[in-house]
Length: 418
Image (cartoon, rainbow, N blue to C red; front, side, top):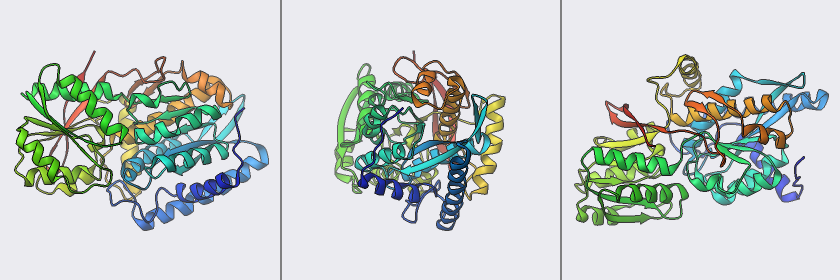
């Protein structure tokens, strides 16, 4: 049914991933509003470990447990965003803990593997999930780690559903990778068009060197903006860089009307603060990664003229979406989190339900049959209707534009690109 990986190295990796992954974080998780406090993380890890042990015992007794892998960063540069997706997945599993296949009711066990926001660690985490006999995988936050693991899931014939990994390369040439979010070509065009609507004629672009998400989204914005305006400055920065003043000084000298700076949760506040401290007053825009309360908290007084595109907003949802909002807010606060719903949490919720819908449609726990069912499944998600095109990409054509106001994110408008 699928290839097995049995080397001692991978068994060791599996042990490490299961110990660190099932708890929803670790003591070295980045400081972020989406991450649980240390005591909460420890409690969650203990509880998850007990649940895993009970589930494994049940599986040994009657084979009534199936495993879904959660391939997300819970530590590292993107740990905050990864945990937001994990919360959405855990809540969906809490709401829908079983699935019936062939007349047998199976308990769905989540197996979490922390890819640590790192491409090399992503390979180890992906292999650990395969060794754990998962029949499907959810994740990851971060296109780079998703791309790095893609061939591993494909070779093992395990279907994966990305939640918010927006780079086109995630599903390109991989008929085992799907995703429930819109893509960066669309997102880049949306933000370029929005900049135009705001009167921008000159743009500067600041991206992270070697990061697939940042460089890809920056490129798509550039192509769209260049069709009507001028890109007057392009700057790049290194991973883990904290001083952006040289690049920002070059941007300031080019006198742009807007800066587009798709970057991580960790780097965004630094870029915004340093830009404003240098006297740059033009709007600063980015993509979905900037929808995180930590950014607002860490930029202090410099929250004016920040704009971003994202996948979900609480306004305008249908009845099912309203029920999700009520229940998930309670879930977040019960876990010591803010009741603000991140868009990527909603995508995590939708990805889980889409995979379970495919299991039901296949009426099988065989990963290949589930993969085949995903090509035709239709799910009524809280982020919109979900079905997949021939590349495994969700058929979506709408993005939400938000800004920062009164200490929170404020919905401005929806944008559709044909």
